[in-house]
Image (cartoon, rainbow, N blue to C red):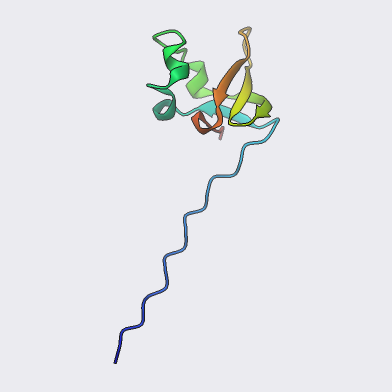
Length: 85
């Protein structure tokens, strides 16, 4: 009797898409070595990795983040951001 192929494992759920108003932080692994990191200070501030920042605008693959500090808003790639929890 021929073996029946086992059903494929369920695909891992993709993280929910970040939308305007979401609280986010920067994923250190995705940020380090990126073009954005190279164009910034050699030692990024800790608050971007600790969060939360508010996602103000999403345009294509970039999002504008406002931190709860007196610092300028920044544009980062969406794959470098993760939901703050």
